Length: 193
Image (cartoon, rainbow, N blue to C red; front, side, top):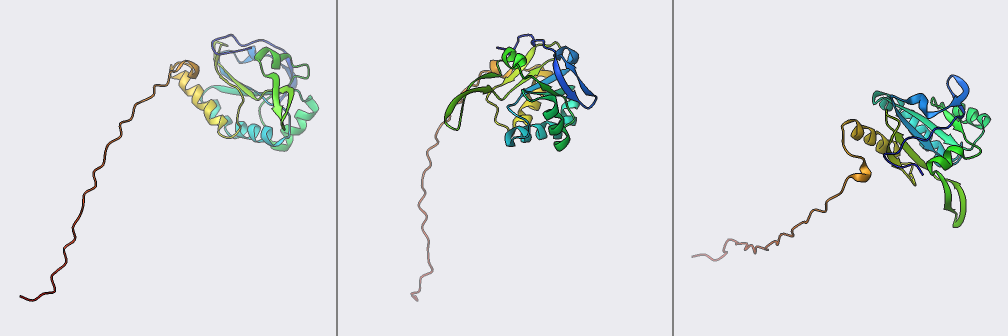
C-alpha cells in the first residue's frame, strides 16, 4: 500500500488523453506534482462529479504545477465516451487488471448497498516533484475534495509537514460565568404633589 513519504509506484498502462491513446507511467510527471485519483466507474453520478470538479479546477492545479490523471478499470473505449461527454481534458488510465489499484492500495473490500464486495476504493494520491507521495486521501467524499487536494499541494509547496504528521492540539476553553443584572424600570409617578 502506498503511503505518505513512499516513492510513487511505477506502472505502464494504456491511457487516453487529449493527444490520443498512449501508455502512461507516473515517471512522465517527475519534476511536477501529480494528482492520481482512483474512481470506480465512468459515467456514474459520484465519479462524474469528481471528474468534472478536477476538470473545472485544472487551471488552479496547473498554477501550482500539478497534473491530474484519473484511473479506473474501464476500457479506453469507455474512457473516450466519458471524456467526450463531459469535456474532460486530462488523461484517464485503463487498469482492467488492477495493477495500479493494488500497487496504491486503491482496491479492496467495501460496503455497497449494505453488502460487502471487493472493488475500487475512491482514493487520491498527491505525488510531489521528487516522485514521493506527499498526501493520501482514502474513502474520498466527492464534494469539496478538489479543494482539499489544492490545499494539500499549497501546504507542501510552503514546506508544511504532511497533514498526517500534523498534530492537532485541543485547546481548552474556559466557561465564563455571566451575571444577570436586574434592571429596575422607573415610571413617572402619577401622583400630584
